[in-house]
Amino acid sequence: MIPPIGQAGNLAERFRGRPPENVLAWVLSEYHPRIALASSFSREDIVLIAMMTDIRADARVFALDTGRLNEETYEAAEAVRRNLGVSIEWHFPDREAVEQLERTKGLHSFRESLENRHECCRIRKVEPLARALSGLRAWVTGQRKDQSITRAALPVFEIDGAHGGILKINPLADWSDEQVRSFVRERGLPYNRLHDMGYPSIGCAPCTRSILHGEDPRAGRWWWERPEHKECGLHQSSHGADRKEPPVPPLGRKKRDR
Ligand code: SF4
Image (cartoon, rainbow, N blue to C red):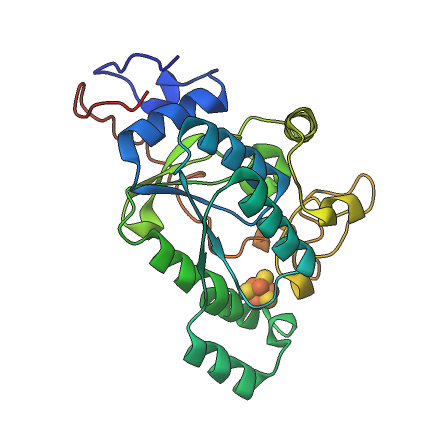
């Protein structure tokens, strides 16, 4: 059931303790087709794709093909496309920027310095993400709080100041890894084989490795860097010191789909 929309308070308060399906039903009714899920084809993303397509078969999903993804990730994307009947909106990096980067700095410049790593992520991820988000009023991610210290304060709703102040929704922020696994198991969803190979986090092949039992879930991302640097620039909005509360849409502004 969709909670009633109050005039006061904020979305975080309104949906406190509500399951992700309720959050998604509401945001899809408010923002579709100007809302989409950003998918890296992690377990979390596939859970959200299943939830969203349960609500609307035409829910939008986009993905960034950095040119450096694992084959297992492409296989997971295809399994999702076939099994869940969803069209994946792929976005690629700017060809000239990649050519310039590889011609001048080689294929592994990201290992040489944090600056070079950020440059590669900017070209292959951040700029394509900005294109994917242009025209949207909201986007959905599969981030969870317990994935890393950089996500410990992750809210379900936040304002994405880096992308024009659109709404960013993290419906699984409070879910545990076990909840995600259970959902995949019970629904018989396809998932990325990398998870069975010790990869809790899905990213580019040269910058992601498997982790040991007990290691931080993000330990396999850019493992040569300090933990507080382990983000690629895709998620730099409001959780943390500069957090802002999202605006509350007025009552009855739009007819709901369900
Ligand atoms: S994760 Fe690695 S390969 Fe992928 S865009 Fe960032 S630096 Fe480049």
